[in-house]
Length: 433
Image (cartoon, rainbow, N blue to C red; front, top):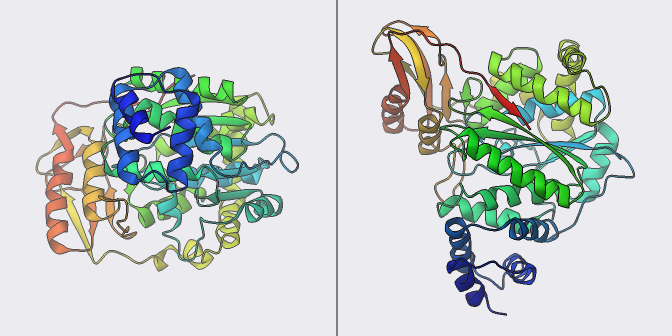
């Protein structure tokens, strides 16, 4: 079998066999297939698509490319959560310590930023010393000791997906349903979760532009889960504007810590309560969603959720003094206000434009080998539905260069649409599937 033959077959729009897909994944994972050959096949998949069987075969090949984590001896009814990506999406940092503090064992394998969307791994690594790359034995020990581990794919779990994930980011192949679905589900299957809840984002700041596209992706991932013997549910969320108020790695960690102490925006609160209540239900800890929401709020109010995050950071080598004193996070050298040019109501805040600005500032990657500046990003002070006055501060740009800051201010201002008409704040939860 030749990789050239496999590339040409998919280039012509033909269905790849299970053996051909496994040949590609195994060859790319062990270095026998080069980045440029993998890029050619990924591009062909992106353009020509994949059948249901191909997507399932790709998912399982990536899941089986490394070790498969089995937590059945210590946590027989695990629940995992994953997002398809968004702008300012720090939900994992808030939600997972909450449900772990309630007693649901959590192993969450996350990725780096992809395209304009942020990555949980990049955010965690903004905490000095935090190790996302820990081996499987340590993962299991952490779950036994404190009930939670938030890790990267470096632990030999779905390593082929990790390589493809980084490559897709730099060749314009991030918005393909087969590639998104197989990437997410391979991580979830490899990390051993029996129950999986997926945050399928849609809108200007997501890979899926419309609710219809998001439903299609959800259907594909639910089908993969069914074939793999997993219980999967999907919740569609609005990503037309950023989640919360911060976009950028350390900025989002700061917001997450404050949220764990009870200080959170309405959109973040709605997402946390919705996903958390369903996670409790999937774990068999309560079918009444309203009661589950009350339980979540109690965990936050009691301080247990925050303490669990501190425990997590310390357990994975992070300096907990940064969590305990948020002023310790290094600030960007240039923090510049963005002022409104007119009075009125914010009728739109483009998550896509905010995401692009954050990448330009250095919070994301242009090439897969690029580093991340954890300090930079954007704080949005006003969002859709808010009333503003002329010259009122609507956002702050955090930059490491004065010219970048100047350019970013103009672009962030252009991300806002301010008109005379009043609009309602957008719904966050769009559908439950």
